Length: 72
Image 1 (tube, rainbow, N blue to C red):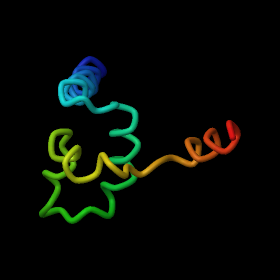
Image 2: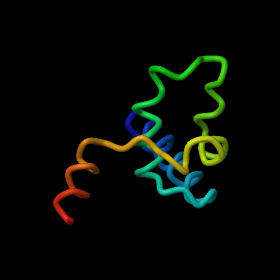
Image 3: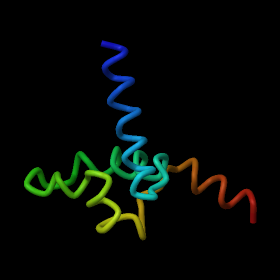
């Protein structure tokens, strides 16, 4: 099971990189968005479609906001 989940994670990260997406930004956004996203539009959360719909304004973690303010 662990090897299978590792393979899924590596595949997702590789797909992000192939589409010139920062995997961290993608995962943070999708994990926050997935519970509120309409099931009929779940395809928008795949890396390729996510880039077109959400990459320009991804959801950020609280940690991101904290680190941005501490560098100002």
